[in-house]
Length: 99
Figure (cartoon, rainbow, N blue to C red):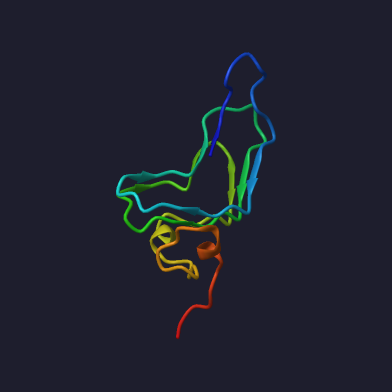
C-alpha cells in the first residue's frame, strides 16, 4: 500500500491505514505500508503482517504515526491463520494458537 502524490493533485494529508492484514511468501523485501510523501497526519494502526521468508522487512516506511502494527520481529511469527499457507480469503481468518 503506497501513499503518494500521483500527478497534479495536492499532497495526501490525514491518510489512515488501519486494520489490514498483510502476507507475503516472497523471499525479497517486505514493506507493505509506505508513506512516500504527504502533507502530514499519516497514521498506520492495527496492521498485522506475516512474511516468514522475507530477507528484509519494514512494516511501515516513511513519516507516519506507527501504532500497534506488527514489529519487524513479529513479521516472522505466525498470526495463526486458519490456512497454514494462506491462499484464499478464508485462509486468512485467525485461528486459535496452540493444540
